[in-house]
Amino acid sequence: MKVLFVASEAYPLIKTGGLADVAGALPVAMRARGNDVRLMLPAYPKALERARRIETASELGELLGGHRARLLSAAAADSDLELLLLDCPALFARDGGPYTAPSGADWADNHLRFGVLALAAAMVAVGQSGIGWRPDILHANDWQTGLAPAYLRLAGAPNTRSVFTVHNMQFQGRFDAEVLAALELPRLAFTMEGLEFHGQLSMLKAGLAFADRITTVSPTYAREIQTPEFGHGMEGLLAARQRDLVGILNGIDDTLWNPSSDALLPARYDVASLAGKAVCKAALQEELGMAEEPGVPLIAMVGRLTEQKGVDLIAAALGRMLELDTQVAVLGAGDPHWERALTELAVGRDRVAVRIGYDELLAHRMIAGADMFLMPSRFEPCGLTQMYAMRYGTLPIVRRTGGLADTVDEASPADGAATARGTGFLFDAAKPEALLEATRRAVTMYADKPAWRLAQRQAMQQDFSWGRAAEEYGWIYRTLAPHGVAGETKVRWEAA
Ligand code: ADP
Ligand code: GLC
Image (tube, rainbow, N blue to C red; front, side, top):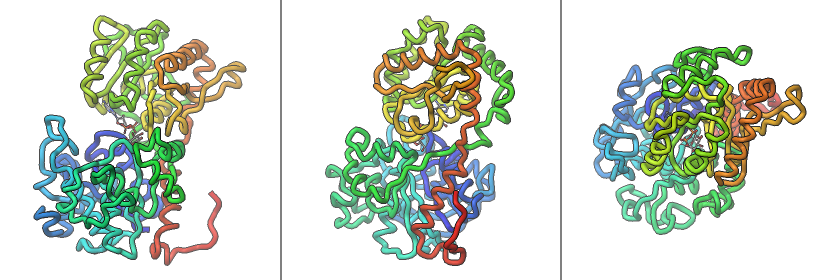
C-alpha cells in the first residue's frame, strides 16, 4: 500500500508536542510492515538542517496566489524513512516556531502556510506533483492538514482515499470566511456540512467533513468527542459520521523512550533491575537543587502548562501534596499565567522545583528520576508521557479520560503484594481534592515496597508498541483503497 502521511511536525525534524512523536514514529512502523510510506512536512529551516540527502524532486509552480513551491526528497535523520519537504521560502523560511512568530503570536498568514501544505499534499495524492509517485491513501493529521482531504475530494480524484486523524479537537484552525478566495476554495463547500463553522472557515472541520475515514488517538476519546463536553462544537458532525470514526491508541517509540538504552540518563535500568533508577533519582534531586532523599516520593509533571493538562489542579493541590511528605518537580511551558503561578509556588519551598521551558533532555531525566508522574488532564486525546512514565517505572496519577483511561489501570495492593495489580492511580472529578486523594493512594502504596515494585514491573511491561497501531491503520487503509491491494489481495488472513 502506498501512503502519503502529511503533518505539520515530526520528531526529530521539528517538535512542539505529541503530534511530532506520532508523525516521527508511526510512518516508520507502517513502513516496517511493508507499506511504501512518504512523510510530508513543510521545509522549515530546522527540518532542512536535520534531514539528509536533500534533492529537488519536482517544481509545483505558484500555489495560492503566487507562492512558488517545490518538493524536496530527503531522508530522515535517524531512519531510512522517505521525506517529502515542501519548500516554499515565502511561507516557511523564517525564524520562530512552526505555528508562531518569535513573539509567541500565531503567524498572520497561517491560513496560507497550511493551505499551501494541504494543496501540495492533494497534488501528490492525485498524481499531479511531478514526482512520479501517487499514493493509494492520503493520511492527514490535525487542522494544519485538514484542507488536504477537502482539496482531494473537490478535485474529484477517483483513485486516492483519505484518512484524517484528530490529535486534539481543541485546536480548530479557524479563519475569517474571507480567506476562502485566497485558498481557492469554492463557495459551495462553505456550508454547515462542509468547511463552515460558526461563520468562519475551520480547517479541522474540513478534515472531519471531507476525509473518507476519521480516526483519533484513543478509543475513549473517539467516544468522548461525540458529546458536547469534548466535541468543541463538532460533536454533531462526529456523531453523524460515527460509522467512519475509529479510535486507535498511539504507541511509543522504543528506540527513544527505553530506560535500558536511554543515553540521556545518568544510569540505565530495566524491569529485572531497578538499581539504575535510584541513581537517576538522586541525580535529578541534585540537578533540581532538592535534598537527596531516596525514601521521599518524587512526583513529576512534564507537559504543556495549560488547563487541558489540569495545571490549575496541580497548583491548587500542591501545598497539600507536600503535606503527604513528597517532593514535586514540574517541567513545562505554556500559558504565561500558569508559568508565573507555578514559579511563584516554588519560591521558598525546597521540596518543589519548577523549570519553565521546553527541554527534551531534562524531560527524559525527570521521567526516569521520578517515582510518580502527574497528568490530571481535563481531556487527553491519547497522551504519550504517561506511557513513557510507565515504561520508566514511574507510576502515573491521571484523570480517567481519553487515552489516560485507556492506558492506565488502577493499582491495588488490596490482597497483598502477591496479587497486586495495576499500573497507576486514577481519579474522576476535575477537582484538586480528587487529585489529592489519588496521590494519597499512590503515596500509601509507595510505602509498601513489594507492592510498589510489582506495580512498577507491570507498568514497565505494558505493550505500547507502534506495531499494533500500524496494523490497525493498515486495516483501515485496506478497507478504503480501491486499487492499492490489487496484486496482493487475499481472502484469507491470519487472525490477529
Ligand atoms: P500533547 O501533545 O498534548 O502536548 P503528549 O503527552 O501527547 O501531549 O506529548 C507531549 C510530548 O511533548 C512528549 O514527548 C513530552 O515529553 C513533550 N513535552 C511536553 N512539554 C515538554 C517540555 N516542557 N519539555 C520537553 N518535552 C516536553
Ligand atoms: C495531541 C494530544 C495528545 C496526544 C498527541 C499525539 O497533542 O493532546 O493527547 O497524545 O496529540 O496524538
